[in-house]
Image (cartoon, rainbow, N blue to C red; front, side):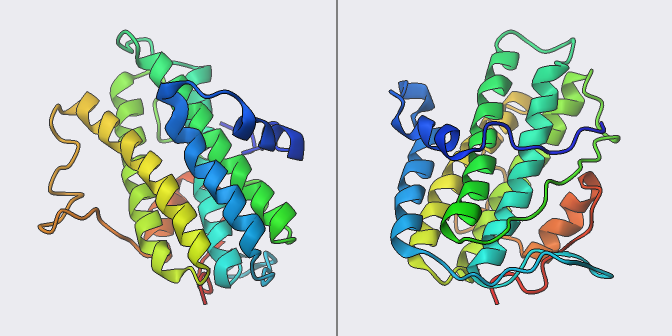
Length: 240
């Protein structure tokens, strides 16, 4: 796939529009995090410490809370591009209702992606991370098993990423925002897991003995996600 991970309809008006549109019950969760997050960001503001200049170590995601926001923006770009491709070229052996599910999830992830870009641009007043270019050459979008397996991997990784990055946030309101979005990602992960293996939504490989989801550092996450991103990202200063 050669398309850039371009934001779609990410101008202020388009970004804000979903926050004020009447919400269907089953879609409520995808808006809830964004609404609360927008309020929190406006009230709190954030550090302007951002430098995305590419170096030999890759593209820096920046430092402090801006670094965490850029980190989340990168992952949401990846997820949004994946689901957009799933919807654009659906697997021939999808079961009934699965394309509709992926269409809804694609909308969720696009909102998350556009939300972080708008937050960085309009609230933090920094230049956000560039549009990334995906590398989905290892994914067979024509096969249901490949799509579901990759989706599960992305969602599990996303949940672990938010859980691991929460402690890096210095602004409490951002932590509230991250908590809301990770709950949406966890719903995606649970649904995909049950599609693949019924009853595996909280399997031992993701939930520990204390009933808590896995948490991973940005470096650990990018070591895995980097396979699907053409650019090299540097998270050395995220949260510092």
